[in-house]
Length: 241
Image 1: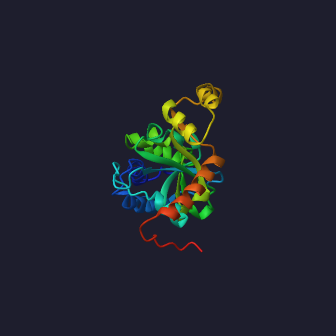
Image 2: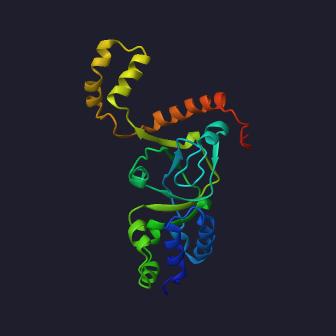
Image 3: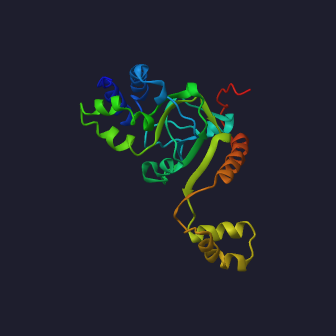
Protein backbone atom coordinates (compact mmCIF):
# COMPACT_ATOMS: atom_id res chain seq x y z
CA UNK A 1 0.00 0.00 0.00
CA UNK A 2 1.04 3.57 -0.62
CA UNK A 3 2.46 5.53 2.35
CA UNK A 4 0.18 8.02 4.02
CA UNK A 5 0.54 11.55 2.62
CA UNK A 6 3.11 13.69 4.42
CA UNK A 7 0.29 15.90 5.64
CA UNK A 8 -0.59 13.23 8.25
CA UNK A 9 2.79 13.17 10.07
CA UNK A 10 2.95 16.94 9.62
CA UNK A 11 -0.36 17.32 11.47
CA UNK A 12 0.73 14.88 14.19
CA UNK A 13 4.05 16.68 14.60
CA UNK A 14 2.16 19.94 15.19
CA UNK A 15 -0.18 18.23 17.68
CA UNK A 16 2.69 16.73 19.67
CA UNK A 17 4.41 20.12 19.84
CA UNK A 18 1.76 21.35 22.27
CA UNK A 19 0.72 25.00 21.93
CA UNK A 20 -2.29 26.05 24.07
CA UNK A 21 -3.36 28.88 21.77
CA UNK A 22 -3.17 26.78 18.58
CA UNK A 23 -4.40 23.51 20.11
CA UNK A 24 -7.95 23.53 18.71
CA UNK A 25 -6.84 24.61 15.24
CA UNK A 26 -4.23 21.86 15.21
CA UNK A 27 -6.85 19.37 16.41
CA UNK A 28 -9.14 20.24 13.48
CA UNK A 29 -6.29 19.82 11.03
CA UNK A 30 -5.48 16.45 12.60
CA UNK A 31 -9.12 15.36 12.46
CA UNK A 32 -9.17 15.96 8.71
CA UNK A 33 -5.96 13.95 8.21
CA UNK A 34 -7.26 11.01 10.26
CA UNK A 35 -10.22 10.42 7.96
CA UNK A 36 -8.15 8.13 5.76
CA UNK A 37 -6.53 6.20 8.63
CA UNK A 38 -7.72 2.60 8.95
CA UNK A 39 -10.17 1.77 11.78
CA UNK A 40 -7.73 -0.61 13.51
CA UNK A 41 -5.61 2.39 14.47
CA UNK A 42 -8.60 4.17 16.01
CA UNK A 43 -9.25 1.67 18.80
CA UNK A 44 -8.39 1.61 22.47
CA UNK A 45 -9.81 -1.04 24.79
CA UNK A 46 -7.80 -0.25 27.93
CA UNK A 47 -8.01 2.40 30.59
CA UNK A 48 -6.47 5.78 29.73
CA UNK A 49 -4.97 8.45 31.97
CA UNK A 50 -4.74 12.21 31.66
CA UNK A 51 -2.84 14.54 33.97
CA UNK A 52 -4.01 18.09 34.54
CA UNK A 53 -1.99 20.55 36.60
CA UNK A 54 -4.09 23.15 38.39
CA UNK A 55 -2.28 26.32 39.52
CA UNK A 56 -2.29 26.59 43.31
CA UNK A 57 -3.05 30.30 43.09
CA UNK A 58 -5.89 30.79 40.55
CA UNK A 59 -4.62 34.33 39.94
CA UNK A 60 -1.19 33.06 38.90
CA UNK A 61 -0.93 30.68 36.01
CA UNK A 62 2.66 30.50 34.74
CA UNK A 63 1.79 28.12 31.89
CA UNK A 64 -1.03 30.33 30.67
CA UNK A 65 -3.71 27.63 30.60
CA UNK A 66 -6.91 28.13 32.67
CA UNK A 67 -7.48 24.92 34.62
CA UNK A 68 -10.37 25.50 37.07
CA UNK A 69 -9.95 23.00 39.92
CA UNK A 70 -12.54 24.87 41.99
CA UNK A 71 -15.06 24.53 39.17
CA UNK A 72 -14.46 20.79 39.05
CA UNK A 73 -14.94 20.43 42.79
CA UNK A 74 -17.89 22.82 42.94
CA UNK A 75 -19.97 21.62 39.98
CA UNK A 76 -18.81 18.02 39.96
CA UNK A 77 -17.28 18.08 36.49
CA UNK A 78 -14.61 19.65 34.36
CA UNK A 79 -15.38 20.18 30.68
CA UNK A 80 -12.95 18.46 28.35
CA UNK A 81 -12.57 18.22 24.58
CA UNK A 82 -9.94 16.70 22.32
CA UNK A 83 -6.90 15.85 24.44
CA UNK A 84 -3.87 13.62 24.77
CA UNK A 85 -4.23 10.64 27.11
CA UNK A 86 -1.86 7.77 27.86
CA UNK A 87 -2.41 4.09 28.56
CA UNK A 88 0.41 4.14 31.15
CA UNK A 89 -0.20 6.05 34.43
CA UNK A 90 3.56 6.28 34.99
CA UNK A 91 3.85 8.37 31.82
CA UNK A 92 1.29 10.80 33.27
CA UNK A 93 3.17 10.95 36.59
CA UNK A 94 6.48 11.70 34.83
CA UNK A 95 4.95 14.44 32.62
CA UNK A 96 6.80 17.77 32.98
CA UNK A 97 9.46 15.88 34.96
CA UNK A 98 7.07 15.05 37.77
CA UNK A 99 5.01 17.02 40.28
CA UNK A 100 5.19 20.78 39.86
CA UNK A 101 5.70 22.89 43.02
CA UNK A 102 3.40 25.65 41.70
CA UNK A 103 0.49 23.31 40.92
CA UNK A 104 -1.90 20.71 42.25
CA UNK A 105 -1.31 17.73 39.97
CA UNK A 106 -4.26 15.42 39.34
CA UNK A 107 -4.43 12.35 37.10
CA UNK A 108 -7.82 11.28 35.78
CA UNK A 109 -8.68 7.77 34.55
CA UNK A 110 -11.16 7.00 31.79
CA UNK A 111 -12.33 3.90 29.92
CA UNK A 112 -12.88 5.26 26.41
CA UNK A 113 -15.87 4.37 24.29
CA UNK A 114 -15.16 3.61 20.60
CA UNK A 115 -16.58 6.94 19.42
CA UNK A 116 -14.24 8.88 21.74
CA UNK A 117 -11.05 7.51 20.18
CA UNK A 118 -9.50 9.65 17.46
CA UNK A 119 -6.30 7.65 17.09
CA UNK A 120 -4.12 5.28 19.10
CA UNK A 121 -0.60 6.49 18.36
CA UNK A 122 1.10 3.32 19.61
CA UNK A 123 -0.98 1.30 17.17
CA UNK A 124 -0.41 3.77 14.34
CA UNK A 125 3.34 3.27 14.77
CA UNK A 126 2.85 -0.36 13.68
CA UNK A 127 1.46 0.73 10.30
CA UNK A 128 3.95 0.32 7.42
CA UNK A 129 2.10 3.12 5.61
CA UNK A 130 2.87 5.46 8.50
CA UNK A 131 6.49 4.42 9.01
CA UNK A 132 7.07 4.81 5.26
CA UNK A 133 5.60 8.32 5.40
CA UNK A 134 8.04 9.25 8.21
CA UNK A 135 10.92 8.89 5.77
CA UNK A 136 9.73 12.12 4.17
CA UNK A 137 10.88 14.34 7.02
CA UNK A 138 12.75 14.55 10.36
CA UNK A 139 9.60 14.74 12.58
CA UNK A 140 11.52 14.97 15.90
CA UNK A 141 8.40 15.07 18.13
CA UNK A 142 6.99 11.93 16.51
CA UNK A 143 10.28 10.06 16.78
CA UNK A 144 10.78 11.05 20.42
CA UNK A 145 7.35 11.53 22.07
CA UNK A 146 5.20 9.20 19.99
CA UNK A 147 7.49 6.26 20.70
CA UNK A 148 7.52 6.85 24.48
CA UNK A 149 4.21 8.34 25.61
CA UNK A 150 1.79 5.48 24.76
CA UNK A 151 -0.57 8.25 23.68
CA UNK A 152 -4.18 7.94 22.68
CA UNK A 153 -5.98 11.02 21.38
CA UNK A 154 -9.47 11.09 22.85
CA UNK A 155 -12.45 13.41 22.60
CA UNK A 156 -14.03 13.21 26.07
CA UNK A 157 -16.90 15.51 27.06
CA UNK A 158 -15.92 15.93 30.70
CA UNK A 159 -14.23 14.36 33.72
CA UNK A 160 -15.57 14.31 37.29
CA UNK A 161 -14.13 13.88 40.77
CA UNK A 162 -15.11 10.21 40.43
CA UNK A 163 -12.52 9.92 37.63
CA UNK A 164 -9.65 11.02 39.88
CA UNK A 165 -6.94 8.37 39.81
CA UNK A 166 -3.96 10.00 41.55
CA UNK A 167 -3.34 13.24 43.42
CA UNK A 168 0.25 14.46 43.38
CA UNK A 169 2.24 16.78 45.59
CA UNK A 170 5.18 16.85 47.93
CA UNK A 171 5.34 15.18 51.32
CA UNK A 172 5.73 17.80 54.05
CA UNK A 173 9.06 18.51 55.69
CA UNK A 174 9.58 16.86 59.06
CA UNK A 175 8.84 20.16 60.83
CA UNK A 176 5.58 20.60 58.90
CA UNK A 177 4.56 17.03 59.69
CA UNK A 178 5.33 17.54 63.40
CA UNK A 179 3.09 20.61 63.49
CA UNK A 180 0.31 18.72 61.69
CA UNK A 181 0.64 15.81 64.15
CA UNK A 182 0.42 18.20 67.12
CA UNK A 183 -2.66 19.85 65.58
CA UNK A 184 -4.32 16.43 65.32
CA UNK A 185 -3.60 15.77 69.01
CA UNK A 186 -0.96 13.10 68.54
CA UNK A 187 0.89 12.02 71.66
CA UNK A 188 4.49 13.26 72.14
CA UNK A 189 5.87 9.73 71.78
CA UNK A 190 3.95 9.31 68.49
CA UNK A 191 5.44 12.53 67.18
CA UNK A 192 8.93 11.48 68.31
CA UNK A 193 8.54 8.26 66.30
CA UNK A 194 7.34 10.13 63.19
CA UNK A 195 10.57 9.94 61.21
CA UNK A 196 10.98 6.22 61.89
CA UNK A 197 7.36 5.61 60.87
CA UNK A 198 7.89 7.50 57.58
CA UNK A 199 11.01 5.46 56.80
CA UNK A 200 9.04 2.25 57.30
CA UNK A 201 6.42 3.54 54.85
CA UNK A 202 9.11 4.49 52.33
CA UNK A 203 8.21 8.19 52.56
CA UNK A 204 10.97 10.78 52.55
CA UNK A 205 9.91 14.21 53.88
CA UNK A 206 9.84 16.77 51.08
CA UNK A 207 9.87 14.22 48.24
CA UNK A 208 7.39 13.96 45.36
CA UNK A 209 4.45 11.83 46.37
CA UNK A 210 1.39 10.40 44.61
CA UNK A 211 -1.60 9.29 46.69
CA UNK A 212 -3.23 5.94 45.95
CA UNK A 213 -6.36 5.85 43.80
CA UNK A 214 -8.66 5.24 46.78
CA UNK A 215 -7.07 8.00 48.87
CA UNK A 216 -7.10 10.37 45.89
CA UNK A 217 -10.84 9.81 45.34
CA UNK A 218 -11.52 10.35 49.05
CA UNK A 219 -9.49 13.57 49.00
CA UNK A 220 -11.39 14.86 45.96
CA UNK A 221 -14.69 14.11 47.71
CA UNK A 222 -13.61 15.92 50.89
CA UNK A 223 -12.36 18.89 48.91
CA UNK A 224 -15.62 18.99 46.96
CA UNK A 225 -17.51 19.50 50.24
CA UNK A 226 -15.03 22.21 51.28
CA UNK A 227 -15.31 23.98 47.91
CA UNK A 228 -19.10 24.02 48.07
CA UNK A 229 -18.99 25.56 51.55
CA UNK A 230 -16.34 28.17 50.82
CA UNK A 231 -16.92 29.06 47.16
CA UNK A 232 -17.53 32.82 47.29
CA UNK A 233 -18.50 33.46 43.66
CA UNK A 234 -21.68 32.37 41.88
CA UNK A 235 -21.14 28.76 40.81
CA UNK A 236 -20.40 28.10 37.14
CA UNK A 237 -23.31 26.68 35.18
CA UNK A 238 -23.40 22.91 35.04
CA UNK A 239 -25.68 20.57 33.17
CA UNK A 240 -24.98 17.72 35.58
CA UNK A 241 -28.38 16.19 36.33
